Length: 76
Image (cartoon, rainbow, N blue to C red; front, top):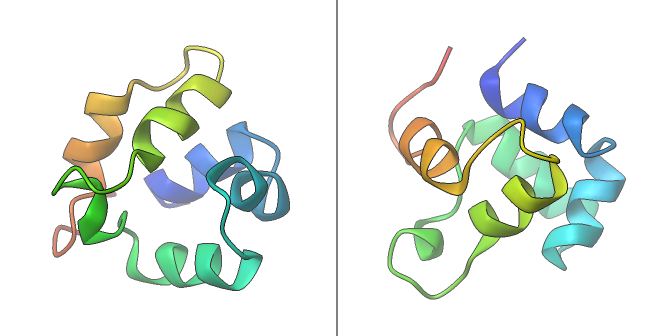
């Protein structure tokens, strides 16, 4: 299981994660397919890592998510 999949599962699945982030489930599946957060989370335009970390009840930190889910770096 990919790291991102475990994050999504920890917050209740794709539907719950997409609601937390305010995006469509289809967009969340695209993130899962790329195994990364969108570029906007690294430029400060969005804060999806913060939202997902908060919803994970302490299982993950926002910094950990940004580090492991950086575009172009396949996390295992």
